[in-house]
Every structure is written in structure tokens, then in C-alpha cells.
Length: 147
Image (cartoon, rainbow, N blue to C red; front, side, top):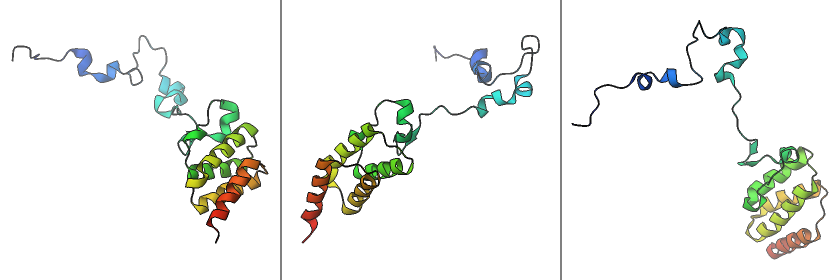
């Protein structure tokens, strides 16, 4: 029991005094009660700071504004299908993104199930994106399944 402390210092006992967002207004120092004058500044009304994501990936619709990687190389077939479809619906025609999508679609071609294959192909068709390699890869994949 030698090293046991019999009290907790004042600042540790009262956590709200330490918390920089939750604090009691001090009438002599704080000129105005912030919550009454500017209710929008209350911390619990603040916007959560979170990156714009979709399906756990950076939002492709905001890639033009935000820049940076879209992490196409980590996508699986279902995610790729959903994201290409979203790009078509949201009118994202950035050739850089579509080139990456086409590249990833070719990689996943052999491992993709047919429904996902069709969705990806449909998205590329609707985007009017013609990639010779993608087309031949997909046609080969479809012919492999046909009797």
C-alpha cells in the first residue's frame, strides 16, 4: 500500500473543467454566453469532420474537386460495378477515372461472376467508353461460359 494515493487532484476529479468544449461560462472573463448569442457555435451542432466516402472508398463524384487516389486497385467486382454505375448516374465522365476502372475491370474479369460482369459492362456501355482491351477481354470471358 506504500504508493497508494488517498486523493485525486482537483483537475482530474472534475473532467469538465479540463474539457475544452464543455465549460462553464465564467462571468468576469467571458463577455457573452456563447450558447445564447451564437447557438450555431455550440460544439454538438458542429459538422462531423469526415472525408466524403462511398462504399468505403473516396467518393468518385468528388474526385475532380478533391484529387488524390480513388484506390481502384483495391476494389472488388461488386464495388467496381456499383461505382461505375454511380459515375454514369452522376455524370462523371473523367477519362482518368474511367481508364482506371477499365484497367481494374480487365484484372477482375476472370474472377467476376456473370451478374456483376453484366453490370460492369452495362455501365461502360452507358458511359460510351470504348476500350479495345476491355471489350476483347469481356467477350472472351462471355464466350468461355457459352456452350
